[in-house]
Length: 242
Image 1 (cartoon, one colour):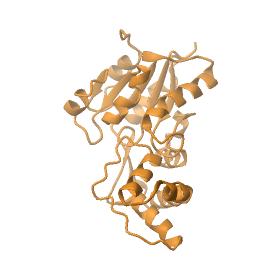
Image 2: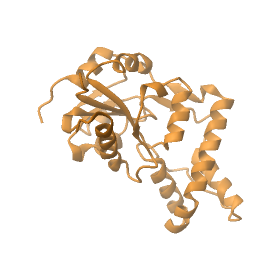
Image 3: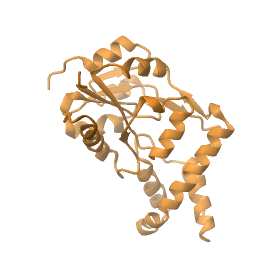
Image 4: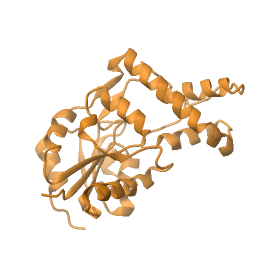
C-alpha cells in the first residue's frame, strides 16, 4: 500500500523543547561571537524577540535587522553564524543531555505512525537541518524521519510545506495534496504556514500557546498534547470535507 497521508511534524514545542536555563540566548551568543571574530564586536539585543514558528534563517535576519544590521551584512555573515550556532548547539547537548526534553507521548505516537502503511512521516521545521538532527538525535528520533523541509530551505515558514510536498513526491511518486497533507505544530505560524495549500492542520498546546489560543486560529484539530494516540491517529487518517 502506498502512503495516502503525508504527516509533517514541527520540532520545537511539538516533538521536544530546549531548556533555556542551559542555554538562554542561542542565536545571540552565535551572532556576537561571529561579529567579534570579524572585528565588528557588538551586543545583540534579543530580549523582546519571539522566535516561535519561524525559520532559523528568518530569525537571524529579523534579530540582526532589529539591531540595525543591514541585509547585505546579514547575508554575508549568515553562513558563519549558522556554523557557529550549530557548533555551540552540539556542545551544549553533549555537555548537558537534559537540554533537550521530549514532549508527552511523542515516542509512543511515532512508534505507531512509522510502520503504518498509509503514512509517510517527514519534518517541517524552521531548524537548520543539522540542528534538527542534533536535537532529535538526543532522544533517538532521527530514524523516524527520512526527509523534511528545513530552515535553510526558505526564509519564510510558508515556503516550507511545498518543499516538503515536492520531496515526498520525489520519494514516493505520489503528489500529495490538500487534506492528504497533515501539519502538526504548536504555534499560530505552524497553523497558517500551510493554509495556502489547504492542508490538514493538527495543533498541540505543548508550546507557548494554550488550547484556546490555538483554537482561535481555526486549525482542523487541537489537542493538549500527543498522548491520546487513538484520537491523533483518527485526526490524521479520518475524512475531512474540503
